Image 1: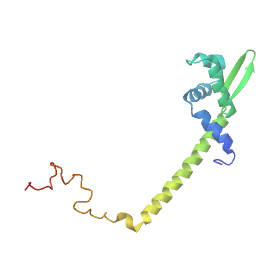
Image 2: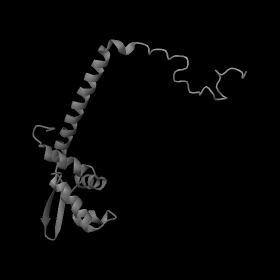
Image 3: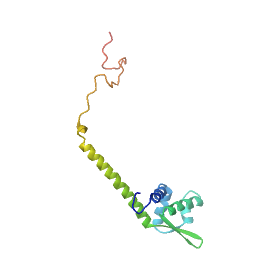
Image 4: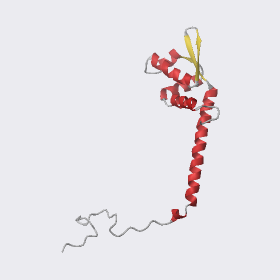
Length: 142
């Protein structure tokens, strides 16, 4: 579990919803105010049904709410859900920063880390073949 109040399934739905650029754009548009699904659909080069599916994914993740008013379905961003997404990301960031800090500490404590690498043998890892005419180590032909 990433955040105490969120289950793994909830976090998975949240990040799945945010993984798509169209859904993120719908979320941004609805932050400014509620919009009808029809109005949202007019903004994208896709079918009305495709936009409805995107809204449904956002709704299942809890990022937006839909309310029917007459013939329209109005979509509104849920600011609390956006805050939960932010906390989930903050928790992940903290976990990774702690891991990086631990790795840095291990590297700082490693006495062999600062030792110079052993010098290679003269011919070891030589980029030239001994029969290569361009080999500067190859002497004149006898």
